[in-house]
Length: 272
Image 1 (cartoon, helix red, strand yellow):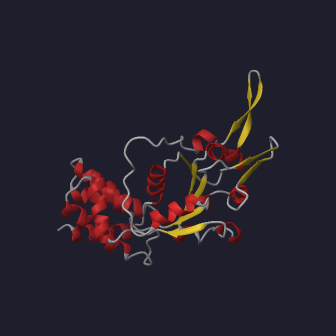
Image 2 (tube, one colour):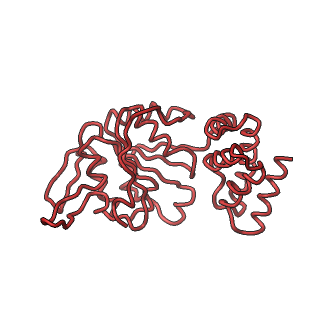
């Protein structure tokens, strides 16, 4: 998979701030890490707001943001760059990590454990006091520009069963644990992002609370705040509430017939 398919464009810091409601002291902690050039690891379940948090902090700090979705085929050259053949010869093209190092951007690797270990190793020299990026193919060693920060995220809940970061990698980051907000705050988020009234938002959050109790009863993933917002958006577009819940919450969580039936029963019991 090529660079353009793996990496989002450089996000400009213009317009309004990406909306984010803090759940603790995560904003102050992130600011201090950025001021001191410390790499940050965001740990938390799928859809709890990790990516939105990084987007908000990049805006707040006035730094460009480069986001890299990690996957099994992500190679070190996808991060650092490669030589390209053109009509007049070969030219070097920086990868997204190299661009971030040169420009002093925040580089965000989403779900970093999905990347191969040999790819993750290239981050090590950027996460300690050296803050350098060696480029073997060109013989260049880049010193990170002021403002550069490395941020990674992953979901320890399900990824740890299959793969995890090596201790030598984990200890290079300041770790921040994010989780789903309190029901009151989550309802405010769903209402704000989904555009529904408070009663509907509270109902969706109550449904999520019931389903999340099934985490250890055969449900691999529990409903995220993101799914609740999707259901709210469907409701605002005119889809009946139960149908919106079936499509946006139940179906994404499971294909197993008995579990789907149990989840649909919870929807019906919540919205009588």
